[in-house]
Image 1: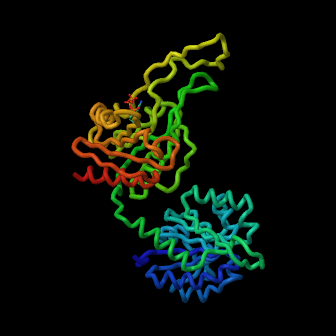
Image 2: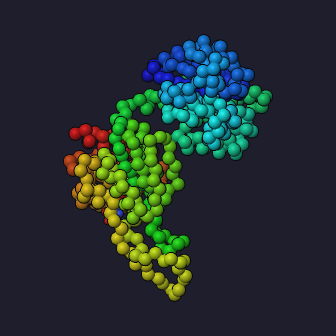
Image 3: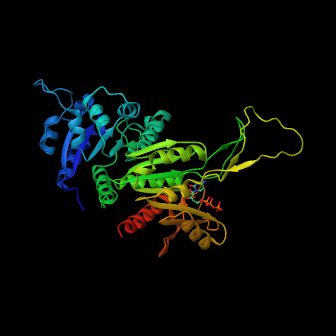
Length: 401
Ligand code: CTP
């Protein structure tokens, strides 16, 4: 597949690598893309708007208003774009992007955009290695932006090292591959999906809790995959270090099972699909001590009471909702999973066994089996992002039946 009809907005910032962007613009046009170019004020010292305008077949812009006094509508430009490529991206522009500084047309367009953003940094090796640059790159990736890393080689300063902007062919290839993988049918467009994720913490006193080892990775991967497919996602997560990547995900952080229960049922009636991937504590301390419990004697007893079963309650209340549960088992896996499928009135259950290495809590991979009333399917071990795709492929096919 090429980039036929894709609208690529290229932001060129003031770095020496800007000279490569004439070739990049020409390459995007050759691939069938429509291209618009915005320069930061500093970029004009490195490239000429006239050349870029001829190559891109569009007016090149750099100011919020043009010389004739008309306004360059940054919102329109942002909405026009299927993708934004910031190349070369200087340390200065990178910093503005992740801190929300908005002092030129390029930044105003960037901040108004909803499309994927690609960043190809270019700077001297010490700047590239600087902790502030590292942090800013990490932040940009946390926003869901796609990094096209700088390469190693001869730098304009005469030094040799990492910091050279990726070659134009590499920029084009990265954007092309992105659309190739994302252009699969947005088969969850318009669907409202609720996902529970992570552990729950049940307070004992102000400093202690009962929790579990769930990382939340599987739930976050499912949220990202559903959002990529066009779904509107509500992700209700217990304490997890995972961060959200991508748009169209409303993240609600909770601590305890009761809070998770409350949040889930604020939204449940309006959703099309629910996926319960959270490892919810089955029991919570009956009393939460107001003050830190001091040690006293050789043993202590904490009375626990049952938490509400969030998924089972969803099963009782479900009308149109497609319900997916998880089962994490250590023995008689299949029998336990099928029993939960019935008891909780689910449409589908995903089983992972703690006996499989690479499956379960804290890992980046998972190995699953899926059961419905009439079907079962086994999958090989895969990264959690690919497992999320398998789960949603299966679910979408079931829902269509
Ligand atoms: N679940 C839930 N609320 C709870 C407990 C579990 O929503 N209070 C959900 C989990 O998110 C998961 C599924 O139920 O999707 C299975 O959880 P599990 O704890 O294994 O099932 P239980 O019914 O509690 O069975 P057991 O603890 O006996 O294995």
